[in-house]
Image 1: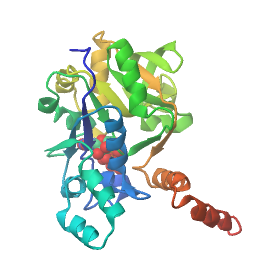
Image 2: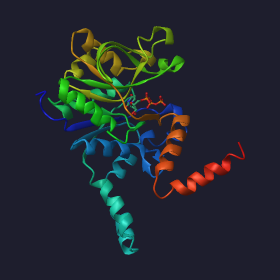
Image 3: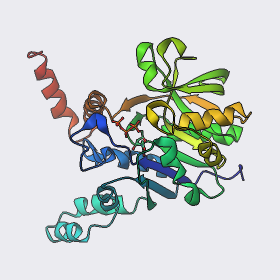
Image 4: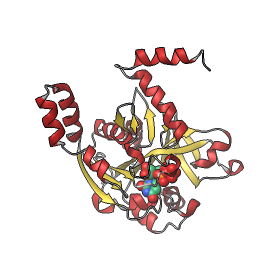
Length: 294
Ligand code: UTP
């Protein structure tokens, strides 16, 4: 079983997105546009580029925006064709052809662990990837998920993505205790969700990319509500680690943006706009003009 390639990916998108209210009142934060694509499209593309062919999106309330985005839009396509906008038509059509996507609903936002648990029938008996679309990782050389898959293929065990976080900010993350085994690769010894800064076992914080084996589901079943009253995936992973299950971590190469947070989202927008081929030059000029005002 563990020798198989990673073919399936799960996208939890049922969180309440309270940090981005009121924008997330009637639409999931995963649909916030980063320049010209919704956040979730970036990570779906990342997964597809890694060879994922089957995707499950876990939705909450107001799921229709995500489903509609990845569906064919006959009316729009028709209008674009009639107006001779072939390029736009292809752009729109390509989104609906990205991957085989199915949906399931998390009825209550009881936490990320609980959201991932909704994927148990979809996953069946295979190792699978989990991507959090609001964690945008700009990694031009090797995508974040590719970095995890490379470790999974070598060690045949679950893998979490991490990055270094200094100071107080560490207490917003799951944090791991590790033994380094290679450049940027670690064996996980323990983990804790949202520790006080002085109790953090390291400066390696878990970010939104994971490879799990199906035994994560029985660990989630045994996980009590933790930080924030939610069923935390970090607590489920910790159960496995404490039972002696091998777990690995990668310190991601690349720049991670927390696009579920207003400031993080603004920073990501500026960074991506500066790399966008149609916008970069004009946007740069505009930013330079701001210098006089700041
Ligand atoms: P966050 O920790 O960012 O929580 O979730 P949130 O509720 O979405 O947002 P805030 O903190 O209130 O602003 C991390 C990921 O887990 C998903 C979210 O959609 C996001 O992709 N999630 C979280 C669920 O799918 N279900 C949950 O119950 C909680």
